[in-house]
Length: 378
Image 1 (tube, one colour):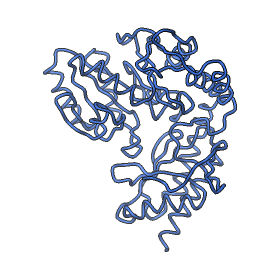
Image 2 (cartoon, one colour; image 1 turned 30 degrees about the vertical axis):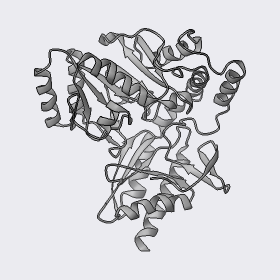
Image 3 (tube, one colour; image 1 turned 180 degrees about the vertical axis):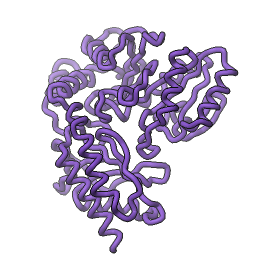
Image 4 (cartoon, helix red, strand yellow; image 1 turned 90 degrees about the horizontal axis):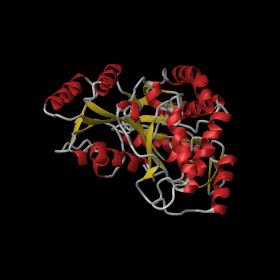
């Protein structure tokens, strides 16, 4: 839903609208270090002073190569990488290059979101085709994949989100993930982990596949790695026999100088300030906070998630669609920005920048509690 506010600036974990109102942002997907990180701003300004852009077709930017290597190092793998301008492009290129162009069957998971381009859009919409098969992450899905393998003499391509955000903050079942790992080890499938939304750090690990014990053949990243600027990345795990030339870009802005400068500064800040370690440190306290404050309230069925990405499942028999929208609007009036996810927009997504403190979580949860209770008695 479009939120009727005009955001003009930001400070740490707060966004400020045109009236000067400050909103605690728990609807974040890109600005993982908040809205006013000085080191990222300095890196951008410094690179703009030197050179904004020059075609990557004729010159490889050293900082671009350095950034790509850093992301491989965080995954503890040897491999190659390709820069794009966004996560959607990274996913689309991966599916097209490894799947469609090589006549490999592509498998997507029901409820996943990978973008709105051609192949990614088909999976996001759950649209079956000659190229794309959509499966549920359960025993029936495993059976469907096994049938595809019997009909194919070459590996198939499977793209996943270990934690599916648009499906309502739902993690893939452990048995299903173990099955995918086995397919990769046996060279029956190429597994792509879509890290665009979840990384770096939202799960308490740098990559979500590390949190869920997956060993993907390649993974994709999006604008959060460039501090919010246009940037995407495909990283290839050579140990899993997936190879790519080093430092190749797919678009004129892929691996551009300004975004890569921001990305290097972001990585330095993540490590210097122990940002991801703090996410893990707060994880159990956040789980308890959500359970203690929200689970006993009428209309709340479940809380779930990991690290700094959580979901509050609403009872749709109590909160009809119009009322669910009202929760967002009433939260804004109380100084909190949140959003709805799930097939029926029935899950409140809580996803602040990674620099949010536990006190910020307490404030957000108490606002949601107040809004829900007030609505039930109104």
